[in-house]
Image 1: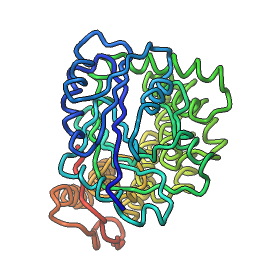
Image 2 (image 1 turned 30 degrees about the horizontal axis):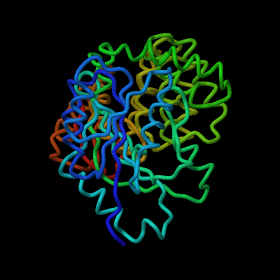
Image 3 (image 1 turned 180 degrees about the vertical axis):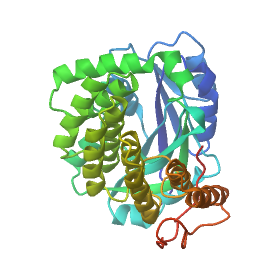
Length: 382
């Protein structure tokens, strides 16, 4: 088979500070660039033109899906890739996309979409990792839906129920969730407004509840946000696993911020029972137990997290849970219990694991001599 072609489709508005970097990272692997400009007053449209993009001026109508779909209508290539202006492809990894698309297995396995690895940068140097769908076959039936946090996968599954998603280790770096960028475009306020409007139109559409719950959490409107998250958790049908896991996480964090610690621990236990490999949840349960003064129980939960190890790659979340971050938390808990020997042990392990000096834990003093399995990989996390 020949090399399949790729259309890069984007929507922009006043993205002059970011657009050059984004387009530069992708232009060598795409065959055409389509940019839908929704009302820029800076040089965004001109910059896109400098990269040979077809620029479409589209009046903003409170719908990201409408803008994205306008770009998809113009795409002429076999596959469609989409990026936001504040995202950058890893230039060393990006050529793998072309390589993967030429493989016979793409057709044989009926691959309709490809997930890429998103590195979502947060304040304090934290990095959240998750695989996200960013490359799909160019089919007229495949269009986005939803006013904001628009989705294409539900539509794809409806039209091609036997289609499958592939995954390629090509990294997309995203810094749009840094506070300075959220403030720059007032994203949280904008998203809440659009999601409220979308919920009025489609009250049973799960993405509206999930994303409104998440945005209200960011806005510290916790009670209302929790109600929407609980709606998603009560009706998980059709919700992708990584978003379901996040719904459990946001629920736990919201309860903690509201100081409802007993409920936090109870709900977190239920979440762990459903997703036992998602090590991050153990930390939140331990935090609730510490707030309740149950330090020994918190130690036990963190030791469980250490025995589970880092979550598998299909889970979203921060690196360090199940390895050195867990060791550091154990050191803090044991220090609070006046177990200096155990605390020093875990603080030392945290340092060694953070540096990559060790990748496995055998036996440790001060905790009953339990034996833990290997740690799958090393990450960095403050």
